[in-house]
Length: 254
View 1 (cartoon, rainbow, N blue to C red):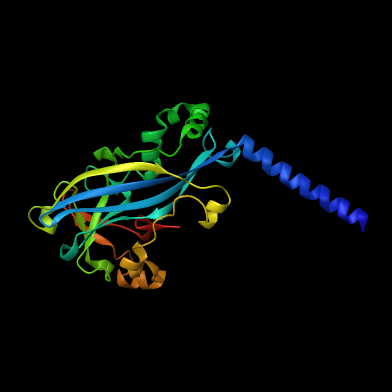
View 2: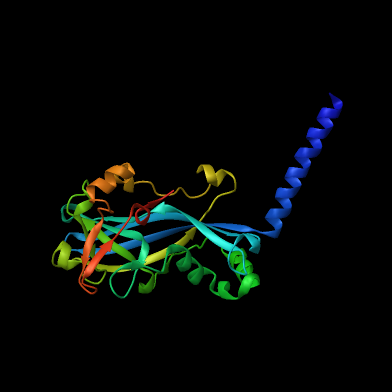
């Protein structure tokens, strides 16, 4: 029995040591950020905020295709501004390209560019940049190039009623006098590992979009059937004269 306890003890120590060495050699940083949008309407200013999270990590280069082992995973959801009887404005987890289609910059790139600008300086620069990221006392103006892809729905219960909305032309969809005036970004408390993984530490992540868009919980088969074999989240793209498709991860990622 003593021998068994001794073996188990050595095994546990070895596992803990291995994890500790790995964490020191390949550190990770969890960032939680708040995005806020302000919309001017004839009824007054409407605001909407969302708190999302990104885990930036490093790993052995042999596990990646590049020379530097690094990556990120996000958790969060679309920003929502409730405009009352005019509808809801959704800012997705993806940017808008010049041709009007969804694309970069994604949230991870936005956070790195804004709060860790030297992240492109090789592996050392990337690690040093992440080490300096910390909650900010006040929000900063979010440059327009980082504004998200915006949509709305004629019927939030029906994904086929999605409509693209230009950030600089909300009035064409929501009525005269409606204008997106500003967006801000702020880093908030990310909590302490592993409690943050259980949402027991740090600034709580926003959790509301699934209540507003119930089809986010539909089975994949139902989504494909609704979209005739493809995503039902589609809309015409006037610039490309084609069709822009969206998917659920643009609205919610867990």
